[in-house]
Length: 100
Image 1: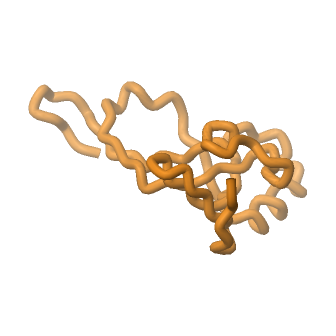
Image 2: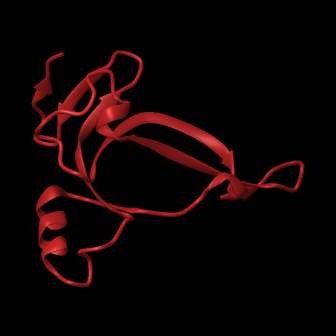
Image 3: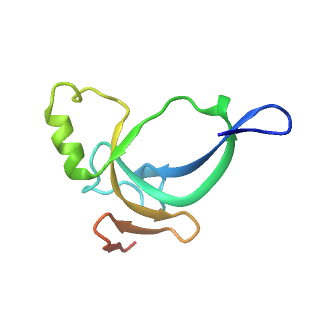
């Protein structure tokens, strides 16, 4: 986070995609709170950020959601893999390519 020349606060963000936002779309194996990390980065005004979320590995996610403390959290997601928005290529968190 830094202050721009125009005195606006700016943040660099890395984009994550919901399965339904990928070229392949939501698959049956994609759980409710799956996200795909991408190499897509942007610099945005801090005021455009609506909220933060937490992205963890799938095992950690499943452990957390078994706890009452995390069961109803709307800001908890698990990393399902990576997505390249320019090619549409999806790779699972285990490194296995997903074919369209």
